[in-house]
Length: 222
Ligand code: HEC
Ligand code: HEC
Image (cartoon, rainbow, N blue to C red):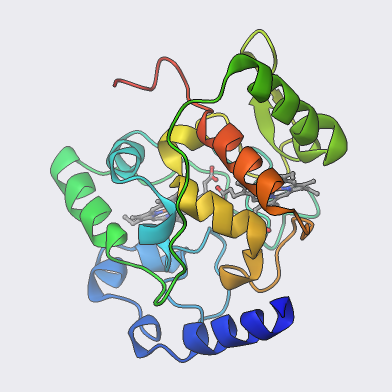
């Protein structure tokens, strides 16, 4: 059943004409020199942006484009030098003026995969006890911490750096996207560097809520 669904997802994704081309603004602003804006292009040295509207929170994009932070300390996994520990891109990321950041963030939010499943998630915060139990899943049962930075009990960042940092994931990522990524990463990335897990529904929801609860205190102005 799962395989049949993936087949259908694949077809609707790769056949969608809107995703065949890079938007003119992405070329004009230089973003397309590093990022991929269509799944039909060769992989870039930077993360894909053709589903940015599914993945990111708009406020975070506006902030990031003006004051970029390091998310992948060891470099991007598809950077040709990643495995040698010498990524081609060592930063800093291009910095935009506030007005341009707002305009490009809005343009990025329009980039969405067609026909994505909608996911209904609980919005109530996790209790301390439940969060503690999911932390054990994240750290021990699935070793997510081996590749991703998260918080320890004293709220200090810790963890591996081969995957993107998750310490600001609650401000950065849409929870629905996190759920779909954990369930079917191949919708977004045909060949990634993260293990593909077969979570049951409860584990999926728990991990998603746990990741969504990761917020940098100082960076969160709300
Ligand atoms: C010289 C190459 C380069 C250029 C040009 C560039 N970027 Fe990036 N961008 C990167 C790399 C590499 C990362 C990953 C940084 C990290 O993980 O710390 C990144 C990260 C991002 C992210 C976060 C993506 C994610 O999944 O974490 C966004 C959004 C982004 N760039 C938007 C843009 C926009 C908009 C432009 C054009 C104004 C642009 N970039 C131009 C290399 C580039
Ligand atoms: C072997 C290393 C590894 C392990 C273990 C791992 N991941 Fe990942 N993860 C990655 C990499 C690398 C990426 C970026 C996608 C890519 O380049 O393949 C990623 C991407 C992600 C993302 C999307 C982040 C973004 O900004 O794009 C989330 C969320 C995530 N992982 C959560 C988890 C969770 C939850 C677990 C445990 C159940 C886990 N990961 C286990 C390596 C790992």
